[in-house]
Image (cartoon, each protein chain N blue to C red):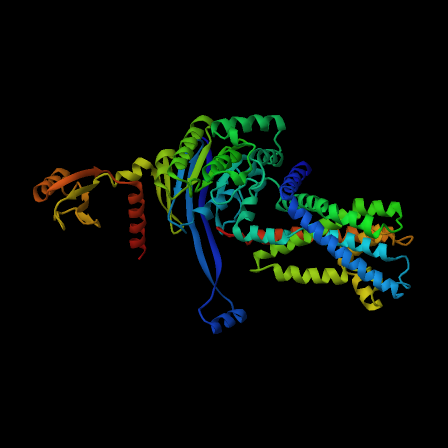
Length: 331
Length: 265
């Protein structure tokens, strides 16, 4: 397999100006400004092979965007190395971007007041694509992303979901080998999110594009990606498949019941009561400590149960638990 | 790259042309300024105040103002747009295009200025021709001024405004910087009258600064005020200050890129 992206010991430290509260401190800062160093990314290292679909996850401020910007060459790292499609991003940025597609969910590359088709024409010129090829590719993408009927519509008249489909297609016009997506489903409703996810999954399968996406939405990861990188406080804390990520948490089950009684408790080892409204019981059960049937039996014996559901661990819960254990280890 | 820059210019021009009323409003503003200025100089002339001004009569002075105002009004609020791009992070995303950011901005400036010139001239020119009247023109100078020196001067002013916008990497608000630049430009560039009308010490000072290249030189050339042998020095001056101002823009962009942060500019 060919490596699309290789990152080794990548770190980025920002120097930030600090100001104590109060007028005197503000005046003092004019004479003697104080600074602090913020480590945004620390010793990041991983490889992504061609055609892989990788989720790059982490809480806000974890260093995801900073890492992406170093990988695209927008930011210079403080130390470390990166090779993206065989190029050093911050030294060969302009060569690299010809082979790279990027979507930053909150920053549009479409011309707000112009029809969608005109942005595609402009991008074709900027990327130096032959006009006929560019038009054929645009029509192909418009069909795949289902926006042929929107081509002559000004971008400002599009819904957020329609705009995001156009953004994605625009980033693919020059047939990039690697697609970097920063929160591509941010702000979208459930239907639009599902549509974007299925398009991304199809794109990976049909065009063999390598995908690296950041998201706060577990659904993006579950439906599009086959590998997860989890970054927390600038450090890579998990690198593996979705199955591996979930493996350590499969023994946990979430049991939810609607009961007639108020304040029902099931006191067993390995059973944790989660916060729930009146007449509801929500339990997190470690099945290696107490078998599930024993907990269900205790529940049925001790309470009048109107409804009962059992579910496996959710990705969001797993990610939260990794984040909490990192925070505990840190303190 | 030229084709890409022209494509950006076309996009920017079409974007401006989507708002014809805004464009005509700036043309209307220009017509009002020209009207006030025309009345002012007419009064001065009636009092015998224009006798020492050589070739410049009322029509030449109003035409001079029309040309200088085109340089000031055509670029629009480019500095604010660039500053907002820097602050919001749009600037950093623009680095993901295989086109230098300065080239992108100059393409955008070219398109904006072309569309705005149409709006400005749509009302300013008829006012000049039908109300004030045209001055006695030297056609070679007028054509060279309007076809080359004036567009280059407007592009230089655009480059300055983009540079001021890029200062957003270091300062919170670029508006005061632009305000200072604009006042120097108005006075030392000769917005309202040719700098030859100034006292000697001020004229000498203005001669050594870039402002005259942006306003005075194209306007004076357009109204036929250029004396014999002045053309070559004017073109050399234009070339020199183009190198300095475009060089300054590239330098600022290079320095600013080091300040790109993760989320914002």
